[in-house]
Length: 279
Length: 278
Ligand code: SF4
Ligand code: SF4
Image 1 (spheres, each protein chain N blue to C red):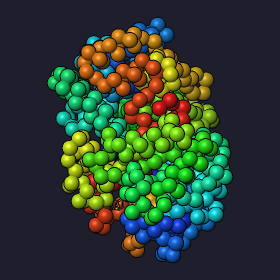
Image 2 (image 1 turned 120 degrees about the vertical axis):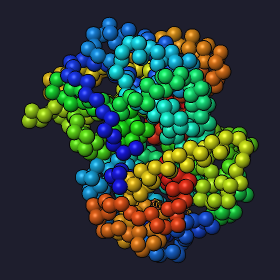
Image 3 (image 1 turned 30 degrees about the vertical axis):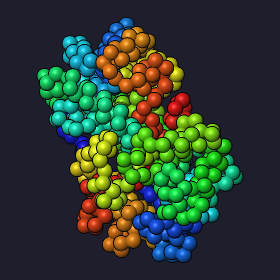
Image 4 (image 1 turned 45 degrees about the vertical axis):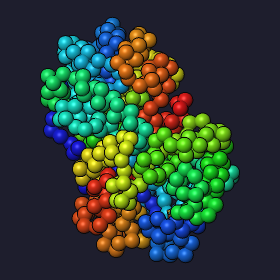
């Protein structure tokens, strides 16, 4: 292991108000396999992480905003370093957006809010995330924009449409009308599906993937070389493997600072495609 | 990517200048060098990323080598010298990678083989002292040549660990293109103050609507090091014209002419992004 730099918190466990068809840990309103975390639990790991020299924090779930103590946890993280929240956005209203803005302004470190869309239009997105979710996510973005927060919006999209597509232009236009004149739109190739990448051809996407392969040639680039995932049930090697018992490495961060054998099938995806969940 | 032994010791100094990424902006490099000398520094160091973005990459390397400026390797020199397929800048967005790719292909095809060989032999790290302060120069971070150390995304805890792991008091780096510095511990019990200095870049402006580019001067002072950032005016109109003649993207010229970044933005953390125009 290169050393611990990134700490993830599975603050909402596996509980989510959505149930996306592609969710790699099958989160849903009823999946209780991972419990919600308590603020005191997060605080304990944060204090430990500080002594270990951690650089940055990520908060995820499930849906983090289902955790009633999320804001308290974020404030505690932002006293120590930058924090990113990965959310589906559907629970962000005007009041929450204003609260996030106050937290961001109160820290020397960045608070990044990251929302995901699966495609540039409702048809593509809603087929995966559920009916009506495209509009609900855009509504969340408008609350954030009104509060003065410019979220990172990641869009997974079939690769050949990633640059220069009409869909992208339309979405950008809509974001601008919400007051996001500098949208932070990240288009993600559909990395997790091997078939998608093989389908790719045409404009420069091969170049992008070639770049990712290069980075992944180095084990130090794997998330598990510099990050760990904290859950209510202990510390796991990475955000991807929390459903594998053998990926639980200990009860505290210090207990997990050893290399992890890359034997899981998902490790192949990480290695071959440079998969990384960080912003 | 793991820490490497390719490291040199430059000696002890009182007042020095650090140049960050030049990105082929040889006009700004010459101005900065003249300015640094007029500001009475003992030495000038260049921290890598000599190519990319701007025109005629060989002119920058010719200047650096002829002036005898001690240089370390950036990700660009690493990539150019070992015939990599891209610049290893570490961008994560396809649009950013698209532009990075254009610069890299242009720069690679116009960098002489003897310059590429020189780049391959450059040290990764350079150490020096400023009075009682131990200084370690690297490109991105001492752990990773292409790590982005932004002000708002680098925790004090992480900095403290880097300083401890690499046995230094002041970490000097570039790679992000934005200059900043932070002291994380005051002088104490005969030990100097400790912190970081990101020297910014000579290659393009600092995303603040000003056309000047920046370098840093560090000077030994009571209990530590005093840091100063120096703006460098230069003939940016000429640079933009040469970029156009060389067929480099309009977006790059816009940055040179307006002082606002137009590409490589998606990598910026929230606070740095909010400070820019795009
Ligand atoms: S919103 Fe995220 S956590 Fe919830 S089901 Fe969808 S992918 Fe899973
Ligand atoms: S899935 Fe495997 S390779 Fe990827 S981060 Fe987790 S342990 Fe590492």
